[in-house]
Amino acid sequence: MELLAKLENCDWKDFEQIISEVFETHNYKSFWNVNLTINGMRRQFDVVSVKNNKHLVIECKKWDNKKSRISALRNAVIKHKERCNFYKEFVSHEVLPVMIIYNDECVKELENVYVVPLNKLNDFILGLP
Image 1: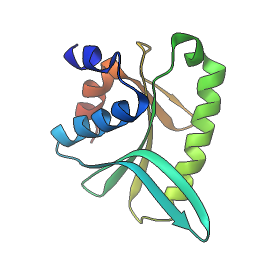
Image 2: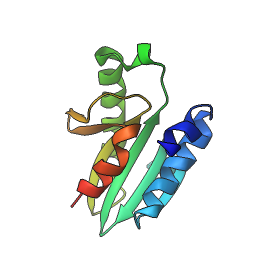
Image 3: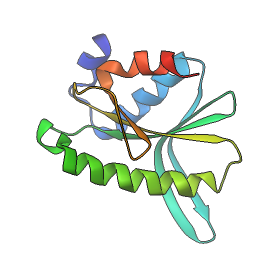
């Protein structure tokens, strides 16, 4: 709960950086605000965390509760999935698409992207193989 209180009034940049730090506390090598250009096409990634040759490509969404509705979430997931497919061209290891949202919904999977509420992040990380 201390993390939730810390993030309540932060901006999106701080939110991304703190998420990166959370993964580092779980022994991931983590980077935030990653930009890749492949064949003249550029994509930006909020956080990339790597452990045991598994790359978690993380999109951070600090939406108000209205925007977390399933239609807005589904659109964001589809865009993130496209960015993750782009990232897969860059690495030859497993890529796991993750979206971390700032509200208290349950963990779910949409379009093969894990959607994880902030208050479930630690449990999600601990459950990763």
